Length: 282
Ligand code: 5RP
Image (cartoon, rainbow, N blue to C red; front, side, top):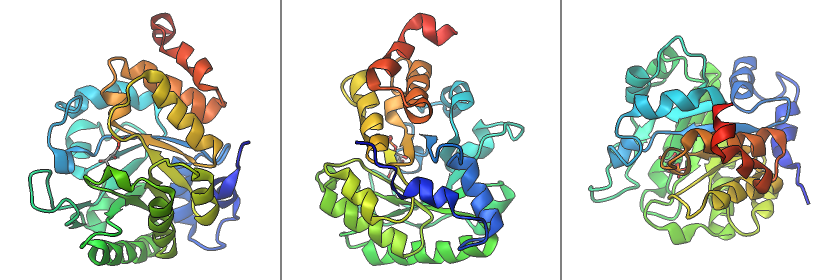
């Protein structure tokens, strides 16, 4: 069964109803109004992981993938150095940080990029991680709320990222449902989260669009395509995959195949055809 969910509904609410024209216009550059879907590329990992595999040289990795994505999620440092300003791709700017994988607490994040700089960089949205259920829950939720206030003031949508840090076992419908609903209640305009069992229930209880993270590299290409397919079939507005694209030996084939699922309603098996070498050259 295909759930249309609130993603499409949200993209169809007439301008001016709840949010400003500018905010809706920016959001519609990311979540395409023709189908209420988005294919985002996440390359923001360096903000706490440093030069992870596949992203050692960001420009080399990102440039060939840009023609196939609806938006790119990254930090201001990588944006300025690794994407030409003439390139017309909507930017989802990560503005949270302040910790590393080697530090004492992964969730100890704050807003590290000003709204002024985000506007200067022509960001289409700002991304901020929340750490529900940790000692940093209050700090990150308050920062999210403050960012939403600023986003509303300047017409810039806010993407809340329901981060789980090292605790991957938190990817349950109960936890994801709680974190996403709280983010929506605080005013996030869309949310990046994880696919989980009973995902359609999460979609049903969260009144803003959800996009799905890929997580650590999956075993097979078909597993990656199946994850994207399941997510949108159950009502996600799209995906924001990182490692499962840029750590794939065939990243262009993978992004094309994911595009087939997100925007052309392909099945994982149909999309897998696009991974074949002769299709990649075309
Ligand atoms: C962490 C993040 C990441 O930095 C990134 O965007 C995750 O993408 P993926 O899991 O698909 O590699 O959002 O919370």
